[in-house]
Every structure is written in C-alpha cells, then in structure tokens.
Image 1: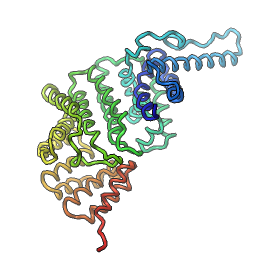
Image 2: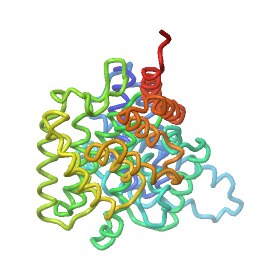
Image 3: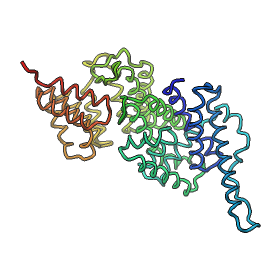
Image 4: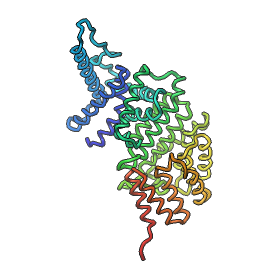
Length: 421
C-alpha cells in the first residue's frame, strides 16, 4: 500500500480507536499515547504484511496491549520504590483492565465513539484554540507538526498546548459520555466551529505542497454527518453539512494536473459532484424552511447558488450579494467582508468592490494573510489597473505559505509584467 493510501486509511481510524480506549479506560493522555504507538506500528507493519481484515479492531487490540505494558511497568516501578511493605499496589485504572477481551462490536468496528470524543475535546474548560488543536489531534488525526503549521506556531508550542488541554480534561473529571441535552446545546457552536476549521484546513491547506487535503474534508463531513444524525432538526448543523457538501463537490475541478489552483469561474463544472450538490441543496432548503436562520445556513445558500449555476455567467450575483449582507449582520468578520467585496464587484463593478475591500485595510486579523491582497489584485485587474494588480499579486504570493497558491499568484503577476518590444 502506498504511504498516502495508508495515511488516508489511518487518519479517520485514529479518532475512532481513541474513542474506544477513552470510554473503557478513562485516561485520555495515556490512551492517546497508546493510539499513536499503535498507528506507528501499523504504518511500519501494514505495508509489508498487508492491511488486516479489520483495521480498527487491530488498532484497538494493539493500543490496549500498549496500555497493559505501560501500567504493568508503572506498577512494577512503584513496587520497587515502595519503602513500606504494607503499601497496597497501585489502584487499577477505571473501567475494565487493559487485558480484558474487548466486546465484539468494538473489534468488529460496529460502535463509533468518535462523536463522544468530539464533544469531550470541545469541553468548555478549554480555551477555543485548545479545543480546535485537541480535536484536530485526537479526532482529526493530524500530527502535532501539521497542527502547528496550520496555526503558524512552533511545534513545541503546539505540543504544550495539546498537553495542557488533555490535562485540563483530566482535571475536570468529565466522564466519557455524550453531554446532556442542555450541555450539548451550549457546546454545539464550539463543535461546529471546530468541524468547520478542520474542513477548511482540508479544502484550502494553509501550507504545504497541495491545494487541498481530501482526508481532512472527508473526515470533517463524516463527523458533521454524525452530529446531524444526533441533532437532525438543528438548522445550523444541517447548514454546515450542506455547506461542506456543496463546497467539496467542486474539489475535482479545483486544480490542474500539475496542482495549480483553478479559480471558480474557470473550473470545468462537468467535473463537479452532482450527487453532493443535490444533497447539499436539499439540506439548505430544508434548513431554511424549518429552522431559525443562522450563519452556516446562509453560507450554504451562497454555495448552492454557485453550484447550481450551469455557467459562471449564470450565477445570480445579486442574490449572493444580498445573502452576504445578511451574513454580515448575523456573523460579521473580515472573511465575510472580503467575500462580500467580490460580490459587490460582480454587481456594481470592480471600483465599488475595491471600495468595499478598503474597509479591511486596517484590520490586523486579515492584513497579514494573502487573501485580501489576492482579491485586491483581481479587482484591480478587472478595473484595468494592471501595474497595481501586478504589485498586489506579488505581495499576495509573498504572504502565502501554500506552495501551489504561491506559484499561481506569481504566475498572475508575471502575466501582467510588461514585455520588452
């Protein structure tokens, strides 16, 4: 099996296996370490021996044995250090002993504890950044280095953040169970935000050699489906699932064979996933008709308008502009303003779009990134200011950490460079 194929298999299994172990043994930190060791064993053994018939059961068994070894070693160490003969041996961990045989449904992969693990990682005792980082690590299966790159912080800093998050969960004494309905309602916005961030990191990788990382978008959709199954009448859960499906439906057309990004207006729409578009549009319609309006529903509606246009010129930009105006009232932020500026340009002209974009010039939340400069460059070119557009494309290329986007932006700048006659 190719390394990439093995990674795509192991990543979603990481959260499932960790969920099983934490439910049984409670000790989040020790269980997470055991799962990582089991994943490492799999990455070494499976390319030669082949993938077992039940990969999840294999990982659960190996990780449980790791816990057995760890606790036996700790028990022996404590006994050696004991100075009083009457000392009792260390208490057994909560739940069944690691050597106990696992129930058949766990080994067969019939039970999935990932959703419970997801709500645990979004515990209110954690800061938002820690919730996201821990979920990406424990549920999304990202390495600490990958999470650090996504957050643009040193790996050691991210490792400390994740370690502190696990210790906070341990100190909280929270059992491994789905929260009660009131707790779920309070924690749900955090859960949805984390899933949205995982999806976005997969759909538009913040760094590295690829535009997207399909294993993250697939896992984000899978987890959001699980939340939707739990809360089928929640409009925002439905809206987020629809948004993910409608956005991911374009994945096959987003890059050229060499990995270069393809702008939305230039994509081959015959390569879009019609089944995902149909499902996503139906979910948006359902949510808008039956639930209080929320930001994810509005974003899903915008994505549906894009996806249902047979040609770029068929896109109903006036409706998109109206929806962005509504979104600015529901969930104001620089990303919304940035996207609204594009809609303004498509309806009222590029100069009007540039004026709308100028409201972000002093916003530090977006000034350090490349997207505002890339949009500015595009609108400047539409307005006929090729020199300024070239400068903006160059600035954007310098600011991105995504290699395909960097190459694309550099090519756009080069295209606008005057040629000697």
